[in-house]
Image (cartoon, rainbow, N blue to C red; front, side):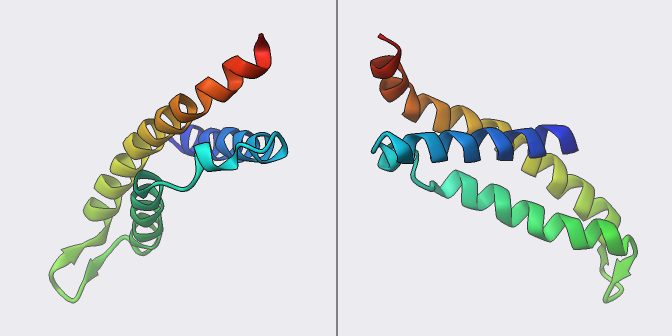
Length: 95
């Protein structure tokens, strides 16, 4: 799961950098999907690190596990979204 998340970050960062160099940065602008992914990750990580019961109500281990899986799914989904948005520009450059 960690490799999926890290791999996506590297791939999309490289894609954004390349698109900015060719003047097409708007086609891979930040989307709400990426923001949701990041939010899920940022909440999951401290929950998983704490791994206890918070305020006597929240089992952070369970919630953290669910959130990191949701984050992994959103990671793949957002990567596909960004690649599809960039595909027309990539096709133009390959021809």
